[in-house]
Length: 219
Length: 194
Image (cartoon, rainbow over all chains, first blue to last red; front, side, top):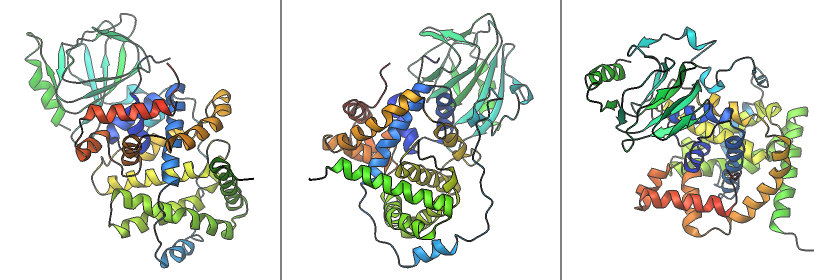
């Protein structure tokens, strides 16, 4: 069970369809395995429904009904009722990028401890990727310009504020300086969505910045 | 006996579910026509709330969603949600897809996958039993919210503004907008207690 969840405002923006899709992807992958957020989301949808029902009905152009009815007889392939696939441990929202396993992605080495696989770049410039950090691995002290969304997919890590496990959902911004350390028992895989390049603040890791920046824009 | 607003609401929901069943099981066009009459004006209005003046876009959204109602009727699960909820989610997804096609959202993320994967599942039986009660509470509670709270919910859900955009438009600090939403959610006793 996850201990860290998207905030109520984030779930609200998600259910209204207002989140940029990278953030929505993170929220969706969290909610799929979080019964609590799933229930909250369904309840938020009932707010949406009530507001929608209460709209002042707009007048219709005369042609609209005919236009719709003329398309009803078009041949269409009946969409199958989607069955829940239980076979994969990969969140369904991510299955559009990852077919079978995390292994098949093209991982690029960021440091001796860290690998990164790029999934997508949003029009806003935010970058969606998976990070894979070795057991016991330390991520250099860093801050964020803009926000970084993280969803823990496998393993666990800790930083100054706590210990995080599978399913935990975190948002970090420029106010946080943090230094995640992966637990020693197993590697850790995270989904991350970064608004802007991460800035490393550690004295010895400052050299690291140009590499990461290059990574950020190279896709 | 005077009918209460919420019992009228309940009756309407039952009627809409009946129409959906006729469409799904008998491909009944007359029933579909009634669904059209109910939803087309709302859908058009929903689109106009975000893009005032874009009547062509509004027609397009209404048309697209209603054709989906016809084509996907068999995927609607009456035990999980009111017809209006299902139609709202179709409209919202259609809106997102339009934003994607027009280049305002990322183009290589499939938005329907994000929502279908979590909205198709039913909650557990305990939550199901509570669902009706929560829906009534929301229905009655929304009307009693202070205007400054309901105004923001309308901006978020109907006009498609993020909290940040709503804050900019109302010239309020983001924190104020967020706390109004939280207060509204608290008043509706919407969230499970952690």
